[in-house]
Length: 393
Image (cartoon, rainbow, N blue to C red; front, side, top):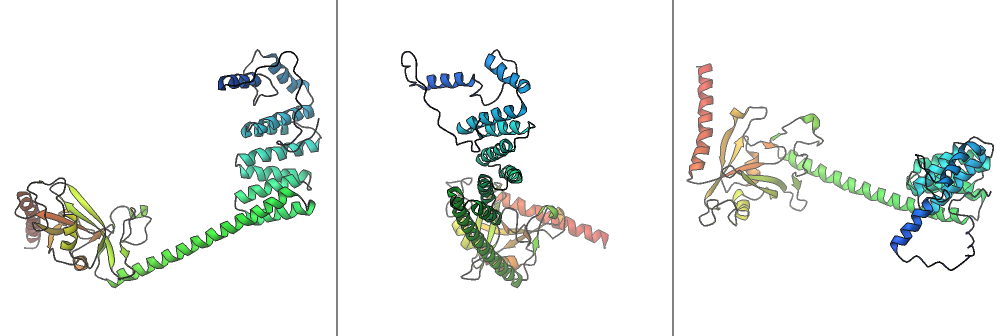
């Protein structure tokens, strides 16, 4: 029996003469499927042995070979079965056959070498690159002068981006066989892959450098605005952000490189309807009126379309003052003029930027809900003042 090391290699089977009438060709998917089904019943074409007993006498004969045939013959048979699976593109089954063949104990080193190299080929197709390297290493221990093992090891190293090792394998193999076309081709492949990898690494490093410089300029711009107050609610241990103006959503303040202005993510909150508007980049040099003129250019879908309350000329803006580390009852409602620049509003000593996103409350003028909303915070403030007075008369 030939010790073919390459599962895809070997001689083409000779066509046998047909005795009797010429069979009609298979022309439909159904007939091709029928042929596949019949072939699967023949052990030579099976991709695996059934786990349960079968009435197929050919299967029983092959099973009996496990105990009747010498270990070396069984290993050879399993190698050939693996080769057939490989040619049919059933690489996992092929690897299984080669593994079973390697389980048999015998003295034929060439056969063991062939099984290792063939299993490496199957695992290369399956992208099990660590297994490929292991089998190639074992094959080279048996026979150091094995170009196919070095070729497949090189392919695995390229896939794993181990380019120094790939180069070493190529040089080793070409030292054994300088004209080996497969090794010469894969050597060029390795050089090209390394070049692409190195270029991408340089591009990635450049992007990271630019990103770090932008973050540093942003940090300095925020530090210059020393009156800004930040609070980061929640469990700080779970935060991955470094600075208090950063948050998990990625919606954070940025620096306009041309103007030097900070561009803030801002929420406008409408407590009456429990709705909100989010502005991704609010230039600090604009006023609240400037931004709300855009936001309220059309009546919100939840407002009265015929008689809208939320128009630029009929709303006021506020923010909630919640002292850092304070309690809910410590909150205060602070009015801020519509013509106030965003930068000025954020510089207010009572304005706390929570989780990196400033928020403003928008209320319609002369409205019952507005009166009740403001009165609630007025009563809260009065109750706090009375409590302090009783403690310190």
